[in-house]
Image 1 (cartoon, rainbow, N blue to C red):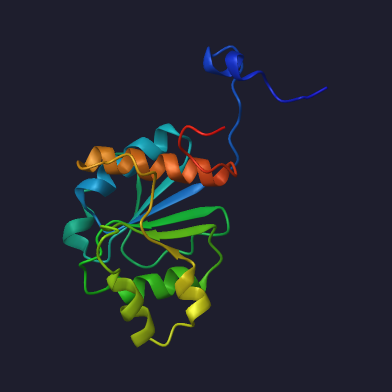
Image 2 (cartoon, rainbow, N blue to C red; image 1 turned 90 degrees about the vertical axis):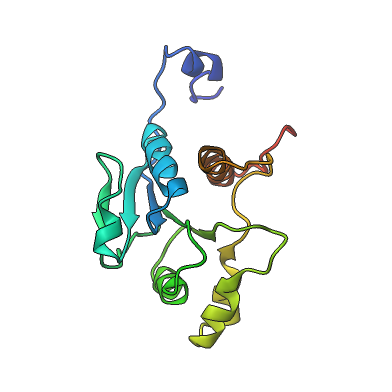
Length: 170
């Protein structure tokens, strides 16, 4: 006999399943970051925007913790870099890989090489640590808009947290 709530009862709001403590750190203010942080809050994440440029940091959705210095997210955190064109990419990823985090990823087109690899190698980051950086991120749903990219990313994170591959295979 299972003690887990029935999925139908949870879906109908009859039972609220308390999610485990989790944090989402969106790195760099961007249109995708705004949606990612807004939707992540709805999923029960503690949301953090890390934006080293104070002028850009004011673009965070209401209720989001904003950091202009590198946060130490912790082992329950998922870190998503939302702009791979920023010159700080390597140093930000190096800092994220230096602390215990559950998951680290960089948004980007899977048909192009990730610029994070060379940036991390130039900083002397070990290959096993570079391999911890996921790219692409999210489920392959053909997302094109910032909102769709955020949904695909969060769906992928939920699937990963739950040990599932995502998609329609059960």
